[in-house]
Structure formats: structure tokens, C-alpha cells
Image (cartoon, rainbow, N blue to C red; front, side, top):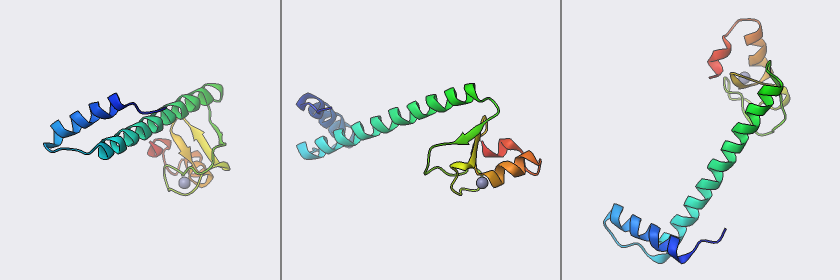
Length: 111
Ligand SMILES: [Zn+2]
């Protein structure tokens, strides 16, 4: 989406008011780009959350997580595909999930 001059002027005014100094057009343009990138990231995260909620509705006991590049919420190690379990407590690697299944640690620790 193209950033309009009106949007740049609006954020320039806000920045100048908040910081008590003049901002260049380039700084204001960069601030708008940063804001746009942040908004895109938030939308992407919200869509991911919604998709995961839908997955849990279909698989209430949990399932392997198909997304790659994600980490176990307990130990921080990579957790995807067969080495993952995603349920109401979140994403865990299978070592941590097996510890939960064996009641060595509570599932809620992942939260
Ligand atoms: Zn783990």
C-alpha cells in the first residue's frame, strides 16, 4: 500500500509534537514505513493465532505443528513436524510433550 503525503504529514506533526523537535520529511516517511511494517506484522500474527485456534477446534487433543522455524515454549529447542505437539498449552517439542504425558512436568508450564 502506498503511503500518501497526507499520512506522512500527519505522522510528522505527531512526532514533532511528541518529541518537541522538527522531523525531516525523510524521517517521517521512514516512521510511516516502520508503522506500516509493524501493522503488517500484527495482522500476520493475528491471522496465525486465528488459524491455530481453528486447528485446535478440529484437533482438541492437539496435533503436530506443520509450520517450521518455531520453538518449544518450554525448552526453546526447534519444534516442528513430527518433533512438535501443539495443544491448548501451546507448542512443545516432543521431548517436553513426553515429559508432560508422563506427568513429570505440568502442561501448563508451556503457558
Ligand atoms: Zn521442549
